[in-house]
Length: 203
Image 1 (tube, rainbow, N blue to C red):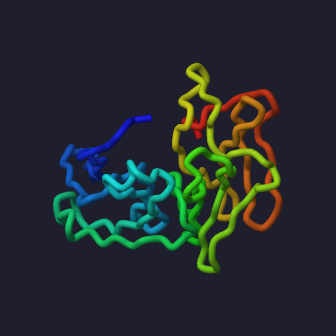
Image 2: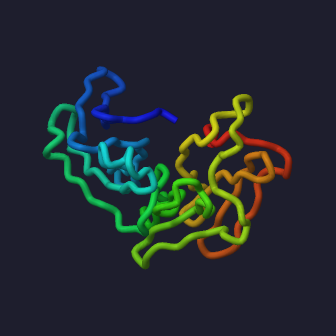
Image 3: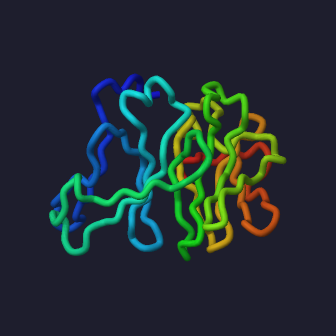
């Protein structure tokens, strides 16, 4: 809902919480999404080509940035190593890595599906490949209730890992937003009741 990006790009910065010193980690023709720390203290983040992202908002990348060792200020944007995470074509919400580093979870939207005719699904990337979850719910794994009271509609939020083998994501369900815990090796379960709504921003 932020409109056309034109020349503007969302950049990624590393800030020292004590001194306030800041260093830009990423530059170039990209708009960067919400970052999260990986299990090895690298940074996982989405990025979208600018201005291509305005023309096709159904595609982006998940990348891993290797942070410099030592204090802030020891690197430049051009020297920050970037590793693209291989996954199915389409749009990825903010990624989150399992505590043991064995999997990356995110919400996957389908390429060329600008109007969401297919449900966005919780998705996990491991060394063995990519797997979608909870398709049997027949609901989108995103807050699309268009509300202005309970929380921000279409807010991007990273999955929350509860262990190395389970994570929590929001699903829109009959006008409310419910929380779902997905297990990698088994079925998932609802954490909130039908009719109750939990803002995805509070995950």
